[in-house]
Image 1 (tube, rainbow, N blue to C red):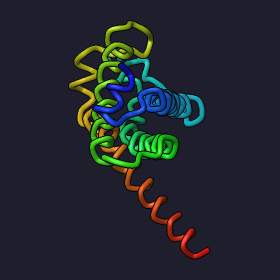
Image 2: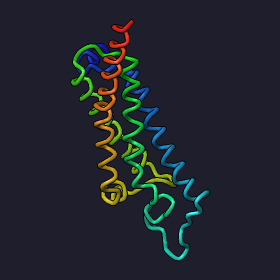
Image 3: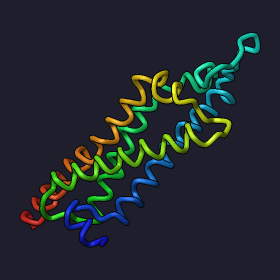
Length: 170
């Protein structure tokens, strides 16, 4: 079944999921780290006179929100590039890239729903906080994840062309 799925999509699912989860966890840890940095180092505090109704009332977190798409557009293409370096695709570059982008963004949307909305924990959000109040940032994040394999593929193809030039000059 895995070979049939790989043939249709062009994706090596084991390696794809390796880089997907590394990227997802790293982006999440950077976001949490940025929030903690704002709180502990920059001394951004929650105003005790204002009740906390949403995550966006927590200043150390709210200050990081515009940076979330930036973390994603920097890190996801890097891991897409590393994926291509490992699997070395030789045909159907753009079909594979489209399928990788779609699979990564769909898995992210589903996992975000489960991990950040449905499972209750101190950092959890309501549906409204996650998908309405988090606009335009959540949309920019999902667009970043979707286009990241395309960016990674451009750099991968450039690296192939560069290496071919080095081989010819020897």
